[in-house]
Amino acid sequence: MGERLNDVGSSLIEFIVAISLIGIVSGAVVSNMKVLDDPLTNASFAVEHFLRLTRGQAMSRTISVVVQPTSSLRLQASYADSCAEDAVLTPVSDLVLDLPRGASLVTTDWSVCFTQRGFADVASSFELQREDGELRTIEIALGGGSRTTR
Image (tube, rainbow, N blue to C red; front, side, top):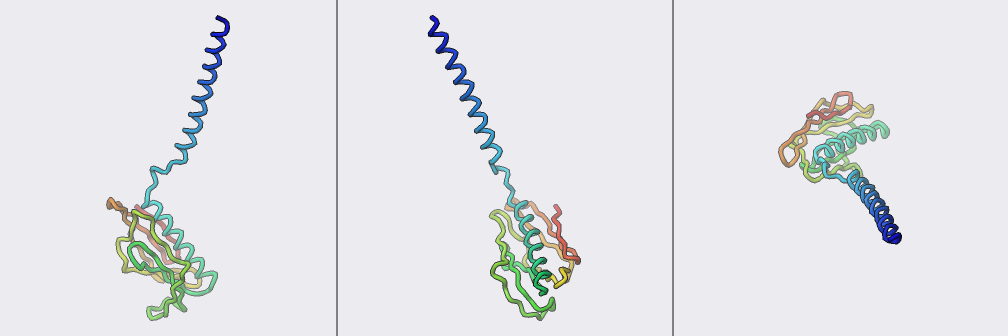
């Protein structure tokens, strides 16, 4: 009878250890899940970062940089000597932003030019749209800063 009690006790300890390990692994898995990943939020963060990057390029290279959409899913930056409408644009191959899957630009008839001092040529705004129709507005101020509003 003494052996039987030892067997029961060790299996109970093993059971508690196994449940603890399952809990730890489950906690790690749940914390790394990206089920609530929102393409519209990701797109708005990416566009704001892209605008900051192109503005920084304009200031560091002391050249104007024009950002304009080439489609509803892509933004392209181009170098120019000035922000004049007749300025010759040279596309920059490494300054391209493809929007995340599930988000797109509502309109593609806009552009913004950042001067050598980082100022935007016009205050403008454009909208990003998720597949279900939810919108976010990106606003670009004359000072060159940008923000996202709902």
